[in-house]
Amino acid sequence: MKLKIMAAILAGFAVMAAAEGVKINTTEVDGRLVDDINLPFVNDPAVPGEWVSVDFVRTPEQFVPGEKVFGGDLYMSGLVFRPNGELRFNGNATPWFKWTKGVVTHSGDRTAQRYTIKAIKGVKYMFFEWKSGDYSIRHRQPNYYVLIKK
Image 1 (cartoon, helix red, strand yellow):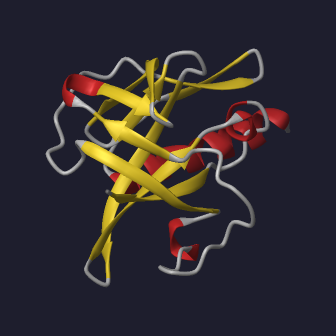
Image 2 (cartoon, rainbow, N blue to C red):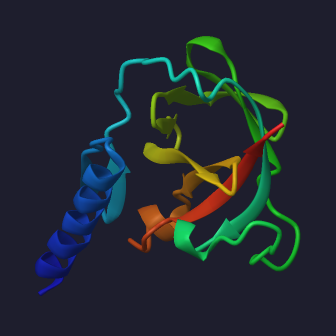
């Protein structure tokens, strides 16, 4: 029964990956979900620069510009996408974070977090999967940070 549940969860992640255009292979290792983070760098010209967090939502569809869903301060204040896959998290150099087109990887957690950029009412927003312990340990679907380019 537990194996069937895990297969359904992993299948759900595969469907999500296909829907976002980025295939991420996920396996279970000692009860934790582990993503394949060995992805080559591919530039995404829409991404370099500073992105500031404006909300944290369960799904991208839940986001409404100008109305903050998350009550309280956001843990992640923003990301700075630099050339060749370098990434700054909350303004700090973070060698364990790297980016490539459509994905940010974290070498410590072994997660590959998808991002998509969508225009809403003429403003471009980044929807960034947040794969915390809720994802890797509890096997829950990731929530999303919503960011706007500064």
